[in-house]
Length: 509
Image (cartoon, rainbow, N blue to C red; front, side):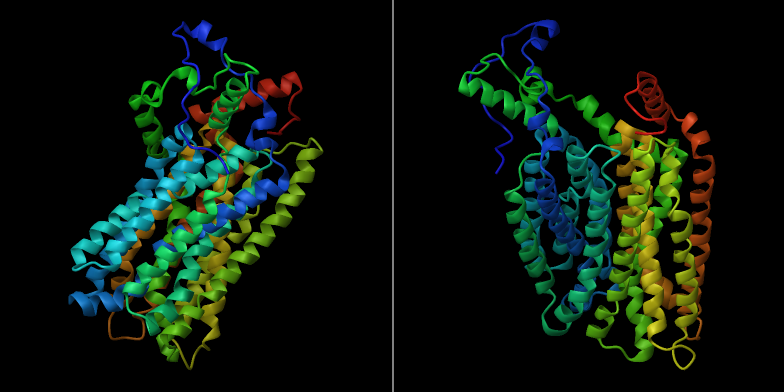
């Protein structure tokens, strides 16, 4: 399904002024855009995106399974072996932003296919690496080649309007967080029965399956679909002078503006430091994701208090997945209620999307606090207490990612891709940093005492409490911050004009 990103035009577009060229622009036909796809088709596409996102996050998290084998094979310490994890996640953070502008120009499908192909190719030299340096180099390339959520969330925006996409965004968020959990569950078996090389071979198999499924997904990017529509009109003779919005601007190299591309790629980072909403909520989201990757290294140390085997430690991540599912279902209920409010025409400001987070965000520091005490192990605590804590943290992690992304989409409109891009960058970047300090943090603070494991969790609990505070500030005072934001203010002005014209209900989107 779909077509190649580059299709030669049967008739070259005559050189003309902008006004003359505009006369050749194909009229926007809503029936050929992703918004017009039937519901079953949208969700079929989204299911393929779900599998792709699972494979990408599985690839990011499964590396920790290889660490014991790498230390033996290459004679390195576990702390040094963690560099492979850190490099992948940090380059992944930058890779997501690098791929995003290309998906806007060339289309989602073939940019994602190119990303998946490169990631799969880099798995081979990782599996066959003769030394640790080679493995780190290709892990870095794998991270840089990962398009990630910048493209998958873009596909959601291609098919659902901002006020209709909450269910779809939640589905994509679930795939993102779930991929990081199924990795340690599978990793327990891989690490027990297979050599470290199979970490990369299995990631390759998963990646190839995901890429093959995605190959049958149609294009969703509106401008590219209109190009294809114009090409069909010319080919059939219905309108020999029709050209799509990208075609009207010339070839790819003619229409690409390196200055504009650099501006687009820089904007997520700019919004991180210039927009308090983006900066503080992304910091919270990044901290939350870093906790999961901290757990990949520390969970085994805690569960060893109950003599858990490697497989049992892996299975202990299942409560985290259950936490994600509980949070996902709870958001479905909240969104069902919110839809009723919006359809009734009642005021629904963007800050309303943080309402459920006011309660769920607290589960993160609560879970960390109890987890810290449970780290004392038996006989004070049974083995299932850390599992309950993992579920609480899972609920909070999903809620933080989902609610902050949803709020940024509503608050920043056409700039939401940059805002959510900053969010995704923080999640991947801080997770990469966590790979460096996690093992040291849980082994070198007050070593040799019973507080070696609890103290790090208490420290993280304190940080979590501080990072929860902005959620309440933005819920009650978010409008004040948006009024002072050039990005959000522009969107509010457009909303106000639309309400005056009667095209939107008051407070709607």
